[in-house]
Length: 331
Image (cartoon, rainbow, N blue to C red):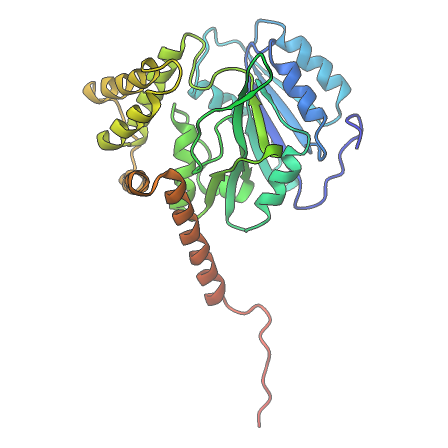
């Protein structure tokens, strides 16, 4: 379908994209171009401009005039970039405008990504493989100047935070995203707690190009990693698991500094008595999964959890009342 043709999606394949963005003029056009080239275009793509002061509004306005499924919601400039909570606040502003009956899926994306042409087609295929698949994504890659792709390390236990594709029933069931740094980890564990499958997988046609280094921030990589560590404290991660995370991340660029920043952020939050996710049930569930990951690896723990959810679903189906009972005749 040409990109300027209004989409007429098949029921069960209607998806809305919501993209919170602020001052993304260097990247947003590439993101829009990759969306316009999708084999199955979105039913709606809503960019929420969270107070941009660069050329972003002009780029978005041109896309809105050209693409019938592309819309822009403009928010006032709050005067400061609020990474994490600000992103979710902007996302929620867009989500609240949706008529959920018109969509089967909703996806939060970032404005610094490039999606391969069949990305959303294949994601929906994957979502339909099992009714309890709640969220899914491909993997993130960073493209070097030479054109070579380098995988950004992400676990298999959740859709990547940059492109979270959700079954709307699941997203509503988990209560949406928490408005706090760490939201993009908490949601996947909430899925498992509520018996939904959450995962990401690598495939050549599902490789998302991330146009800047993951784990950095608008200030510095070290600042971004400290924010990461603080988020791990907030979501309830144990010190034992953080030691393993820090050791693993030490090898990433910037070598040593990145891992040190994560642990520093975690310890600062711990020593200052920073708040944590309030639900003890969630923290117990999270730690059980993380400690299982130490033993089996995160990929193995994810497979184990997903198989448990599938067994639970099969049992639910077996015990459900027959909607079309047959009446046996008396002998």
